[in-house]
Length: 179
Image (cartoon, rainbow, N blue to C red; front, side, top):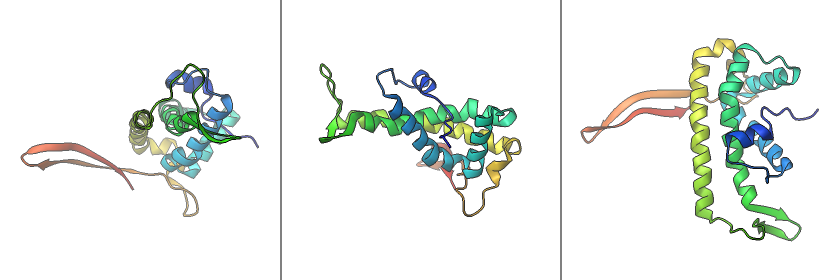
């Protein structure tokens, strides 16, 4: 069975700063990893499997379609970039690990790579936070969000608290964490 990808390279290039110079295999590998490692933690195994099955069958409708098109794909695109950036910078070749710098280009520093990854991670977290809010209000539309058993990955669930006061001023109006 082939991998079911929730986004393709064209969508990834349109949403992020990737361009046509990135190899298709690299992007597909990063999409698979981001779905399996990152997105599964937020959706849970049951919901991710249901989404993949419906996407493959062409029956992604209702709450599933809203979830995927409005939240999952955007978050996933930025999670892919977080994982893809290091492999674009440093690659494993026959001669070992090399910094990928084609002729006439200057490779970025490790600090700049870290900054770019943090920027992509922040964007992914924004969409993940929006997705979790949607799921908390619409879990009835995607019941698999709440159905994982102990042997499968359960979805992270956000918890919110109100602001707290530090030294006479409000420091945080909302704290976001996961269980």
